Length: 368
Image 1: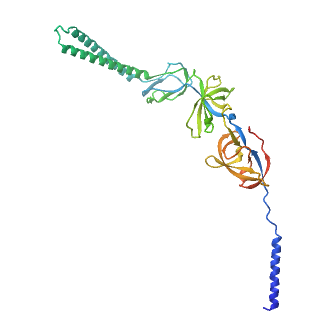
Image 2 (image 1 turned 90 degrees about the horizontal axis):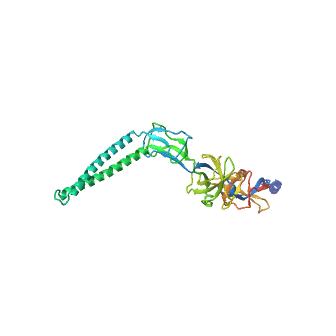
Image 3 (image 1 turned 180 degrees about the vertical axis):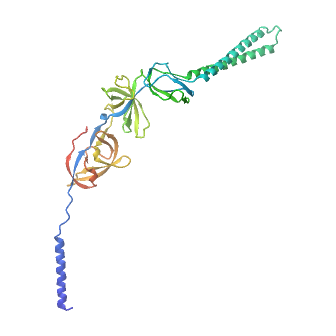
């Protein structure tokens, strides 16, 4: 290539590079994403004393009645809803075999008592001749031995008769208190085992009680004697804790028993009720709306806290631990502090650190 051509090529390359750079410098930079608009609420305390716990009413005296020994049911003399008095005959087994057994035991006892009378008279006659030479001492000793044996036999057979009488009495199911039948669990002609429930009954004279279920976070704050309000169809009545369960059910709730000493007429066994404890002694917990979290595993969840430290607000993901579900939201046991702002709308669309614009802060619904 000639020197003139080389020089021209160099000029062309420089022009092309310069043109490319000029084109690049003129291209617009990608636009910055607009902040997502969110609604936030300030985390506050919730008063646990406003929580109502569901439960049921039952009679303090209640029982499932059963025969001590098994057998065939001869009759059940009460129906569902029937009322009865203490000592009334409610049901009985076929007791023909037991009657024959008792009759045999009584006959054996009568024979043993006759033998006892004869052995006593024989011993007394021989003992009265002691020292006269008319009877030997060995004969007197033998008579005493027969008398002692007859006495023991009468005692044993007397116990057997008492046992047979008790077995016959156990074949008759009698009311342990004044009450009402809540369930018939067997029917005549059925064969039941000893201890198998035949009737379910409740007492009519004793007070009522309710059983509610409370979460583990509430159980440590309760004490026997703590008062509560119990409500259902009428005016709330006062109850007091008599028992606090130590074992949780499958839902993680603990049973708590409340006594209702002065139950109104509208409160009946089997009714559903709600109980509310007095304010004193109850923890103040944090609550967020149900729309404010993304659930995880093992009661863990994610919320987005509004970070206003920088010039542009951002959503910061925060792991929290959920507590009890309430009508106004869910309790937060760990991970948030009172006064923090949490996003309550559209949390599923947020990512950690995303720029946001807070359109408004929800009304404070909690006691602080």
